[in-house]
Image (cartoon, rainbow, N blue to C red; front, side, top):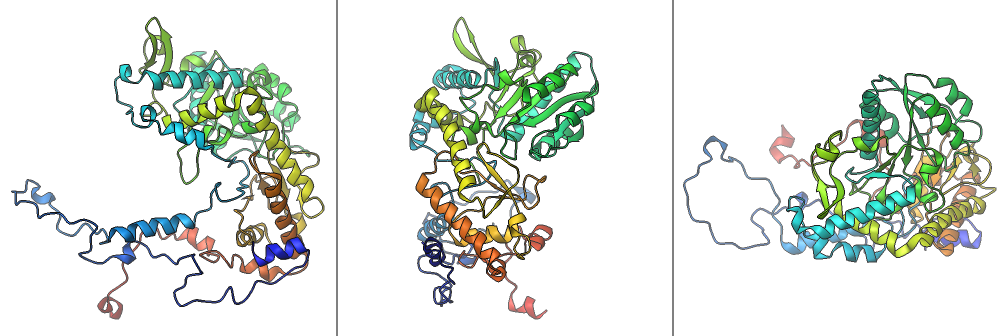
Length: 522
């Protein structure tokens, strides 16, 4: 625990220990090593292996033969091992501490799922193997599909989409195909202003004009504004429920009825399904199509670019257009339909080269079956409980964006920082010094200076209490007038604050060797 954390628990503000923040000869801080890039560690001729000189052969490369060295660094094996081990020690992940990224559901990944995913029958198979050699994998896909349909109340599911945004594309393409089959040309998609950015992007990618819907004073869809924008040219409504303000859309049945009355489809972004899993079935809310983030709700590892998995559930009227492959049961058992023919004649075809992310399928099914129906329901309930525990715990110090309780995540605005000279970004940087990953910042855009926190169900009361004490302590420090402390944060991270505007406008994406003495002189 840092000096500041101890001071928070004691109720007394404290300044960081200047000696602890001092420079060292190496640039290291104890066991936190200052690590060079592998290219900076290059020593020509150094190698981790010693192979015999290959026999001379006549080259057939012609003009394609390489004229310059490959440019890879010369390294010994211990250098490589130490490098990546040291980098791993700089990572912050769910196995390190509370990961409160709102709308991301960063929760514990059970080790049981990791173990099963490494079974040879799942881990070592190849997507191009004959179906006759992978009946267990196909059965697992079918079983997973069954439980996804059970949890959502939907009759069909497409497993292949690679992640949430890919799932959105799948759902909207199915809607477009269904409308074309009806002989209708519709040009608009309605999207709430608080939606994930991928929602309007997906609608635009499918050729639709995006028409925003404002929120009401309670942070939910303005029903009157929605009804006013419905018309014969509206293809769909794309809505997240619970929404990105962490609130359940209480008028969702009336919303669905209005959308259907206009002949449009109701697409639901299922990124926040963790809050209602086992409590309510989306089909019962009037939803026509929805993607699920297996890498969020069903606790498979994600972050750093993947891997993700975004199956899409849909009503019977959209099912014929679902992308292949399909898992179907025939006289000879289960098989994959891999082409747009036979029962899949109206399918969109493939949205992904292979059949989906098998490793995520395995982990998700293990998660479902090990929890059971009652366990999944409790997970959702505990996620909501933990978010409301944070809401109650910081009451009086932070300003909630909307009145009342929340669902799985709690949203604050930056009014509590008014007049302090401290911004949401400054506050987040100070959290890094306290050993916490910052919450989601400045999203959703409908809330000024937003701070969106999602603790998930796997955080203990003790962990939440510590998180709350730090958040309250930082809020008090900001209000006390110590803006400089926040402007200088983070002090204790491997790197200090960057010029984020310059980094965005002029990113350095490739390492370049330093200039030679001659080049520098020139």
